[in-house]
Length: 529
Image 1 (spheres, rainbow, N blue to C red):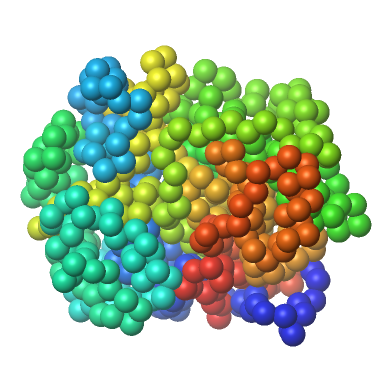
Image 2 (tube, helix red, strand yellow; image 1 turned 90 degrees about the vertical axis):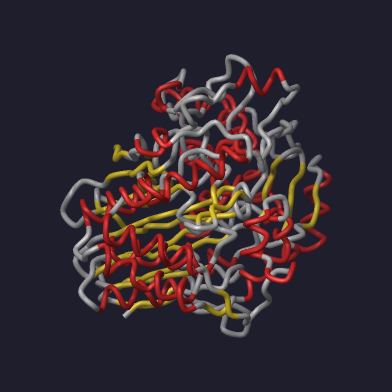
């Protein structure tokens, strides 16, 4: 790894040997370390941390959302867990098309799929955890009950996105007190959420998917015109599956299989693996150009192909085959940008991701999301549950693999990642940022393995994202790089907000050390002990 230049802005990577956590919020990182020190394992710590984030980052995540994880239990096979929820049994694309809709309204009850996070937490805890659920959820319960101080990036997002709450009175009352978003340092509490978390701690998933909480969520959705039933909630179950993978720079990158967009991340990595992206071989503009071209190719395939695994029409193996990848790679020209497809689905950037490892060799890559900021904005006030709008990721195009249908999983953007080498996990990592996530995985890995950056420096490198016909650039690239990209035909723009947010923990087995990073674009940090 390259030595950090201590004159330049930035921070050093975190170092530890007994355990490490990297999250986007200080309270979550500290919670994870407290759990590890108290005898919990990486799974316990990850679940405790994400529960805390579901309280202190309400725009980004919550128990009304979904969860995906890649878990590497010490000495056992690595698993991917799909904690995404299905559409309700009465979902009907034709009914929405008859209303003249071409896409699902992000703030409508039609966008609300059954939340999968709580079931995922309970299953992961029962299968891999060491502590009782009550111990794991205790820090989150205390923060929801007693209140927490709003962190800077949380306040920034709250102010930018709070308007999404205005259409639902209960949400507006809870999250915009006095008609405005809390500011940095304000104290905020959600007692109703604390009560629901306390019930889950005592009675597990049944406290959420059955009884009073489920009944209230259904009642609120029906009042908004939804077609959900208590049976839709009680039937939900997430499931473990085998990760999918592809090689990049002599290592294996693992992702969750569809319905997530991990396949797109692997496709970008496979395309880029055919180019030399070292500093001696390419310029900064070349690097941005190649990432943009690989992303355009992969996202085009994503939007055509990825859906509920029961509805996929082409296999993962075929998409990642050398024949398929080589055909996409061969179309890339270094001197000219390709035509970009126009995206007609929802655009969002609202998720939390975390990495945790422990002294016993367990490693967890976990992501939890409401989809858009504050999800659908539909709020069950007695239970304290903001409901996600993941169903807006369905297509209303008749015959599309991802077309809305009853009890179906939508295309998902949230993707935890894991790098393995010699069949052992060497880095749980992930990049928040909605549609950016697949590109973000490739960007981070390339800076780590092509440029020799440590995880923190790879995290801090300026980001670009080619999406919806535009190439968005963080200003750190400078005017010269932007001009070179414009000359190649890219329609560029300066990003008006930070692009994504990344966490990672590198496991250096030879030296017995953990090296962690957390994105400066968020409030959090990595911490080891």
